[in-house]
Length: 318
Ligand code: GAL
Image (cartoon, rainbow, N blue to C red):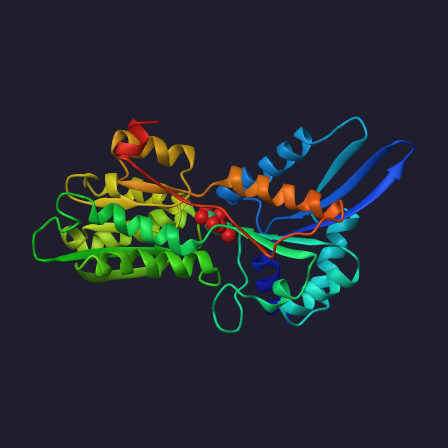
């Protein structure tokens, strides 16, 4: 049960909304629960949610953002709802029954048939998901390799030999990026060889360790290192330098998120590419739909924000 709850807590990020009025000023309390504060990308995302709410304030309407740190009422309430549930559906039902509209962000719950038609979202007019289609980010990673002169086949043996460093395997972003990056290579007609596929849980130190290990075992055979996110790619970049390898010459390295440090590495050639995971677009869409819910307006079930390919040509044109 404990393990289940931990997984559930990690898998669901919730904006829980309620409001109170005093004199003429109406203050909306917005609970924002993020799965892990140490996550680089989700820190950018969370900060932008707060900043964007601030820009929407007027003399009459204020937003009190309550980050879920387990100490405030709203966070307690959200956690309590999770403690009492045995499935994501039940989580949503309880929160909705408590009169709290929900905006699910960043981690897409999939429906029974494995696609984006999650019944708990489709059946609830006060629940929606705001995110980016992780398949697109994987496809973009693969395409950036296909677009290279040697399309990733550095040693000319007719196949692209790669190492995959995955995020949290429970997370659809990790699953889709792993699958669709390689699918893009195969769809373009290239042969691929997976040398190593390990779980780095989105973490920079883990990314470095796993990449160092793979380079140690497979050496020059490693032509491309795919990381499901930039934090792990930044770790991998360190391991690549330590192993005496040079990105763009004898190895390629791809991430996702377009963290500032990663974009800088693409610019100076220490990473082959990354994919913009638009935390500004996503957080603004999440806040906008939250405000709509607060105002009792109708909302869609899903809001999608596009990823963008970030390779050297793109960064140079920025
Ligand atoms: C992904 C992002 C990762 C990590 C993860 C958390 O979209 O690329 O870096 O933040 O979300 O769920």
